[in-house]
Length: 341
Ligand SMILES: *Cc1c(COP(=O)(O)O)cnc(C)c1O
Image 1 (cartoon, rainbow, N blue to C red):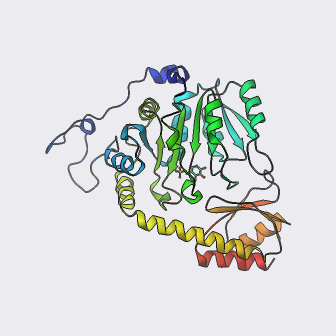
Image 2: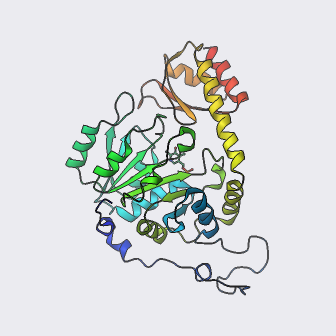
Image 3: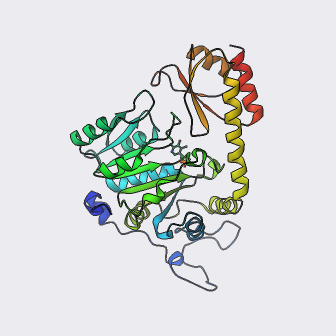
């Protein structure tokens, strides 16, 4: 196991912070009379949700084979990104590292917390240059590295993730928002080996539950405890928690939806062959394509005129649009418009 003193990375005020602990959620009762939280005794949703999200963690613990004490639940993984920065980064002092291009929210939350954002430029295949990584970590004091794989908006998996976890002298957050589409193994299997690792997953993409806003962090007990210390006590509402537990019990539906998306990816790849304005289709391990066009403005506007919304990545990624994989009807509409250009 990697030698690591987590506490030396944590902000002092967070180490000293007393977590808000709900007495009712951390003790066992048979049939309690609840007069402790000033709720209404009437109605269906009158009670606060379980601040410890016990039932969901128990379920996840079983399906992922990870201790419940190594799981934190967030209001989307967005909240977890924010909380992780708050735990480790001193405002106006500490810096984070992120890949470029990658998911904008790492920089967004770092900026809100007044932390500096250092960018690690990817190569033409959107891979990391290891030498560039080693240089950047030598030249900068960095607290957190946000490593997104499969990466958004490029769609590819990052190779040899363990190298970056091993060599980074801080916290490495591996964001696996699209892992279910990739067929790749989760980095959760590296948790035993690396106490500086946090793995993020979400119910927003493959699980089809973006509306519930539920994301998960897997890490060491110590880091999970710190995340739980800074989170709002009732950060995930009871409607969402119940819906997520329902969907976990219907994993076969989720699996068939993933299968369906993978089929649509093959179908689209084939259809793209006869679209003239496409210059390059980047390989994808996620549920979207990054595509380079001959005339990106024209393509984007034409799609928009037809009320097909896509994500223009130009000029940051020259001439590229990120296009989500929809259902067959949506994908057919997309192809029809693209072929008409
Ligand atoms: C969509 C996405 C998320 C998910 O965020 P939620 O807040 O859980 O909806 C996280 N990371 C990346 C890279 C994403 O693309």
